[in-house]
Length: 90
Ligand SMILES: [Zn+2]
Image 1 (tube, rainbow, N blue to C red):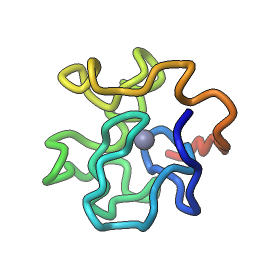
Image 2 (image 1 turned 90 degrees about the horizontal axis):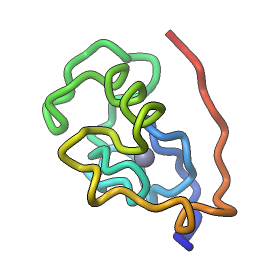
Image 3 (image 1 turned 90 degrees about the vertical axis):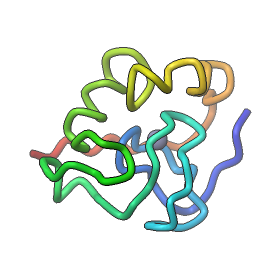
Image 4 (image 1 turned 135 degrees about the vertical axis):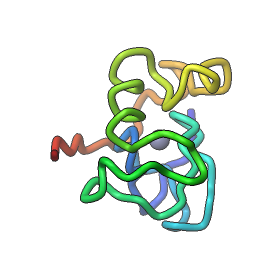
């Protein structure tokens, strides 16, 4: 199981980030946290090369922020028990 942290990933909504905006790669969905949050869903992320809206849709569909990151994304067992608060904005 992954460790829980204080900050919520803007893509998968799990609380797994140690800080915000420091380019930590989310261990659940592999979104690189460049500081974009759910209030800027349609800006193309320089780090991730897609919009957060697209990444969130990808995570909902197949469990990773991007198809290329799918093999690195967490498994269902790894995220079991982690806190998540789904944010449906935009
Ligand atoms: Zn994530």
